[in-house]
Image (cartoon, one colour):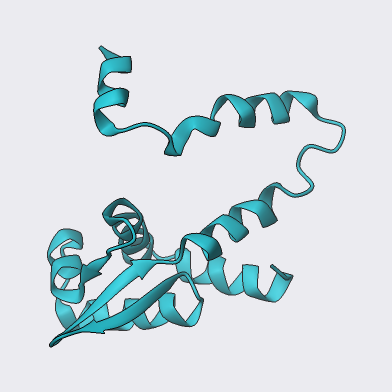
Length: 121
């Protein structure tokens, strides 16, 4: 990811509704969600959501596909991973404590919700 793409991604994510949309789509998984479902979950009107979806799509953070009469949106996991990698690329130079912290938090995407609930109990 180059600086220009990172800046476009950060600009898209710097708005509360768009950040909520991306987080909602990440949780929804690769199957994604129809626009109406996203609007309902995020609590915005469909016309308002349309504007935000366009911005996220333009930044490459989400993708869309047509299914029958609906447009289904999905998080672009590769783009999001590249953004995180862009942020972390130079972070550890001479800072082993940061690397250790990252390695400890690296299990954010492993296991099921039940596994995480069991860990908390």
